[in-house]
Image (cartoon, one colour):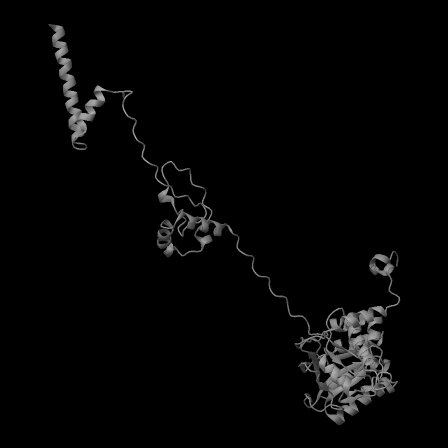
Length: 416
């Protein structure tokens, strides 16, 4: 009897338990009672039961660890599935993408609706380094021939300095100097252009250059090609000091006389070799400025210079310093002729020793007389012709293959 009572109590207890579970599940899943009973009755699936069909995997949008929106939130963070790998470290901040904070919501919305290929394009663009800033343009080089196009500052209170700089456009070969050509008289009253012929020459050209630099003045030098080829360092010193350098033929031949007067090709050789020689000596551009020896300007050669866009220069005042042997006489000649003319392009010679000695006093008297120095510069440099460059190089009879080493590697001071 006791066994029957225990059995009945056990069944009753189990019944109450089942009813409690059913009551708790009824509100959430009304039809789950049968499934729950089946779970208790058949805890294990039988071998004959069909295998459940797996749901297709949802497509995953790739994570873009580089492109970040303004608030630094990854573009596709809200689309990453629960089994996605950990996010890569953030590599761009608000500052790096340079978006204002107010634009963050709109930017995020646009990014979340973008296709995966667009995100990949963004990632590629973000990985491209920004181009380096453009290098600052180099300062403008001096005008052809070394002439400076702006008046430099002068720290010498007693110097005459420069009054004006004029640029000469040599297109078509214009001619200057009222002694022969009247059309381009560009000087104002009391203005002076200093020009020197027949250099460069040792001792004399450096003295003229020193007098000019001591007075913050500039001048134009018409150099003989042979002289320039003998001492190219003197030509380069002039250009480095901001002087304008032109040419004065190869060997100072009078081109109005035979054989040059009867052979224009020979005359052209004399002109062009002079241009090439000065250009080679300068190691860079020179001015397309030319002066005929003895101021003899044949018409056919003037026409030729026009085709080369080289300007011809005569003078307003020929000082005839080449006839004078004393510096005081040179000073007197310059100032007397200038006082009579009132202004002018002065023709002097840095080849002459008396002129070199006279230059400091000439500059002092120019300032005392209220004169202003005008510096001529070309609009562009001269263009040489390769044929004549080669002809000039061929003139260097003493150049040899065993003289190609720099002097510093050949000669060294070992005691002094």
